[in-house]
Image 1 (cartoon, rainbow, N blue to C red):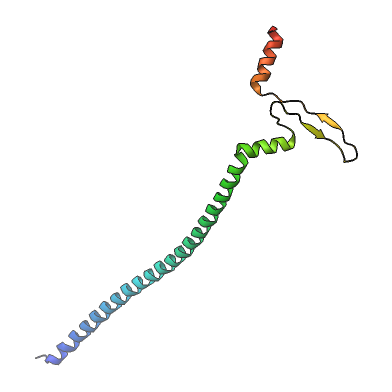
Image 2: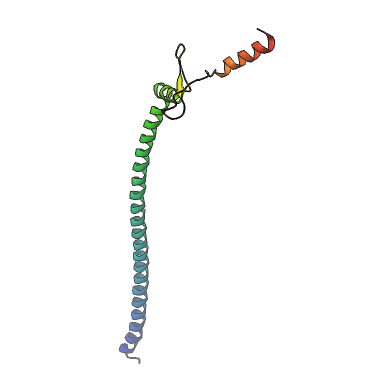
Length: 133
């Protein structure tokens, strides 16, 4: 007869190998999950830093946009356009005379400025000269 203790010893090795295999698989799964979690954490931190940078850039661009809109509205206002054109001698109202001072202060000569006509007036003048209207 075979003693019972011998059977237990072979059975014990099977149990030890099975338990070791289960522990190894569980440790491998946990290690895989931990590594994945660490990667996600690092990626999340990078994304947060990038989000902060982009929010700062958005604020800077919004501020620059407001400044440009203010400058544009000032530059396109009719009073401003008229003022700039008057300063440059390119615009005059009817009944006004424009005097342009050319040269240095010692040589004050008045040079008359030719009134510029818009496109429709020039076109009307062209046809009136052509057809004798």
